[in-house]
Image (cartoon, rainbow, N blue to C red; front, top):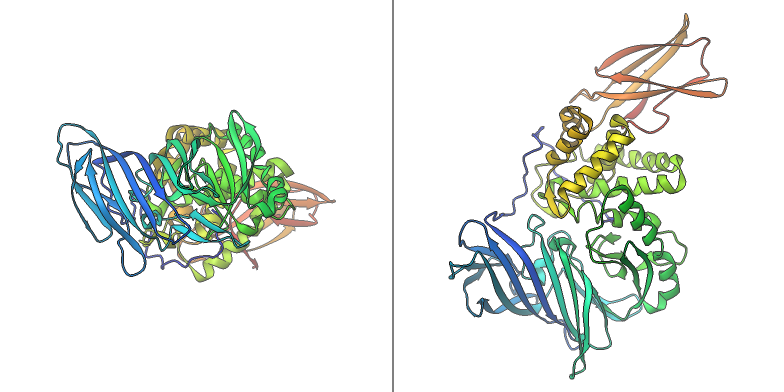
Length: 531
């Protein structure tokens, strides 16, 4: 997603090995949710919704209790559970601390379906509001763990499931949701039933609905995947024009990464707390993203990249969200590089680098910060821009061929599954034949970056280059390209930085005009100035 604000992080308390995850959500690995059917009744008279969740679960190790998240009624907001069924009989359950705790009675079947009926007014998650044009609207805005305000579900990305939305609403609304539309039926009471079904497993963080007055259009079809735009009628022409590029972006990522996982790709103008939210197959973009000026291409590329990274290959722990946001940030840059050339890559990375340095001055923490327990605090310049920079450095270290081979293998292995940083490292090691543990450790689990002072002179046919790392907590090791400018021509050589203070000699016939560190934006370091 694109954020509108940056969230502050706790201070780093030391280097921790990256197979560990701090995420405190109580995961029940003995139970695997297979499918959700969410029945929702929306109305114009009030913000109260009626919900019915059918959840099909597989018990891996015999019948064990399990829990679903659902925020309980407290004052104006929250849900009241009216009935819980196991198959067609009353279930054995309790509802406390925003958890529906179910103890199965039937011990014969390893796969069972339970039904939870509830009603109430959601405080968050389902945004019930008016659009900027004053039209009533309902938008799912679940990231990171807000689905529990309106859906009874395991509200954590470690347990993904196929999903069906059955939306009953007044018949003047248009409805889009996660999945492909399988039914739209007018009912006798002035309501309309709309059903969308998504067979691929989806995390609750990226399930959504959009219910308002829409103008919609098919803007492309890529490999049988329908690409659509859903915009407010007042923005019809501008929205169809702006969102048409989504098909081209989708094609690029299919060609470079692997198959697309979802039933469709809808691009939806919406009420969202984010600049964009990468809901699986139904992306939400902030209302003012529609201008007709075709300026949202980077935003669209970022959110579509998420369909592979974050949605399909999904972080198992919130502390590893860089596998979602860092990837989307860099794969947006890769798309822009493909479209507009390498100078665009360098421009984007230079901007991101300045933001990384500024952020670090106030938040000296690593990308994977295992001190964070609240998923709302995992998003930062670290997980976006610095995560993207790590991928840029990894690409340069391995070379384009190996990098892309590793990316394709990683996605193929973890499509529709869950990952931690260690899983990605292992795949890239196998693709490259290199030990990447120190690379991943220093860039993802150590705070900060190299802060460099340097100088050079020329004598006796050699450039004498002195480089000093100033940060005191860690000595970084990394390749550094040296650009030598002579008679207006740039040549590049690579040195290996491995110590706090190093001196290098580069042979050159004649004094150079100038020396440039990292002319092609491949190394993340802060140039503090001359020694």
